[in-house]
Length: 263
Image 1 (cartoon, rainbow, N blue to C red):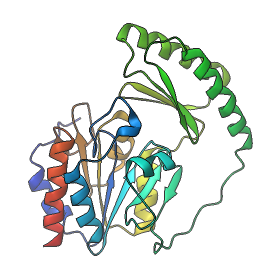
Image 2 (image 1 turned 90 degrees about the horizontal axis):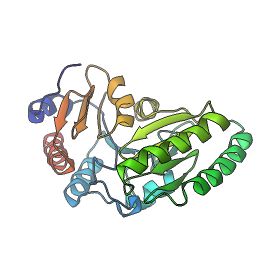
Image 3 (image 1 turned 90 degrees about the vertical axis):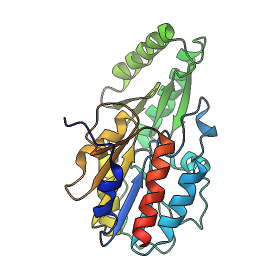
């Protein structure tokens, strides 16, 4: 795997002038520094300003592509029905689009059995983590997540093993996604690669810029086409062509993209 470049200004030149641009962005760790309380996460003001400029430009679509459930993503994204920003929540299971976006929705499958199983496992997982310092379960639309950011490292591994064993026993077909001090379990297997592909098709984008900071973002980063641009925010092995140090430098990149796109 080739080490990505940090010279992102050169890489922006080509994609900024594509005919129809999709800017697809992970939220936590990419637009917003990671928080101990996930619901306190908010995008940096500089990123918000750049996104507002980009979304207002012709033939330019901005989308948040997140593992967060759609309701939570709308809260942390300070997103209302007047927003021009598209949303893909739960790794591409849930979607929100501006009122003037015309798209065809796929038929929804009957998930009653999976939802019943989720309710039971969610309750059992919450019972199992009681007493483990700092560990807690986050409700998700199609699964749940175990958070251990505030758990001592020698305890975190043990509680992860307990919940891993529960899901392996009761729901072996579920998808397991590790992240920054969390593990997410889901009965749906969509990844951010599928979300980006669906957004590309529905927006008619001729090129995509996707940015993310975590293992779950690599699904999308590794799926990008030659004329797209992947950006990894922070450290870690990656398929991205560009790396920036943190959310603050990524805000600079977004601002520069808005300048180039406007010109």
